[in-house]
Image (cartoon, rainbow, N blue to C red; front, side, top):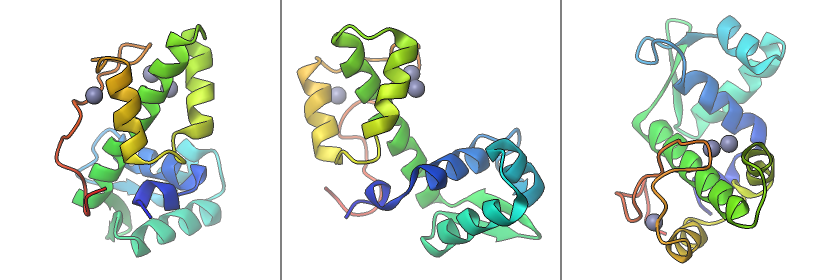
Length: 145
Ligand SMILES: [Zn+2]
Ligand SMILES: [Zn+2]
Ligand SMILES: [Zn+2]
């Protein structure tokens, strides 16, 4: 199964909290990660530990950073999310609604389906919010598929 399909919503949110901090190369403390997730530190630690076991996050001197694999997985998540948003947008949903709807499916759909949906929409360059969508067939993280 693809890495994304094994992640829960909370785990993806944790990946984002680590990957979009102000200085991602320096890492985020547990306190900061918990604050951005709006959960208590023990809950954030549970998610971080699972991500570490999957090789997506590393902890060094108490701070968590994404591994190369974690960065690829997060980028792939954004691609799934934005392609799904574009699909819902083409069906007439308002931009804010496309984001909510995309979150209901973006973890479940396979890379292959995302590429097919992208192709069916003539490879949109950005999502309804203007965020860039990477071209199809970019180097895939880890195993092909
Ligand atoms: Zn969105
Ligand atoms: Zn495409
Ligand atoms: Zn968007």
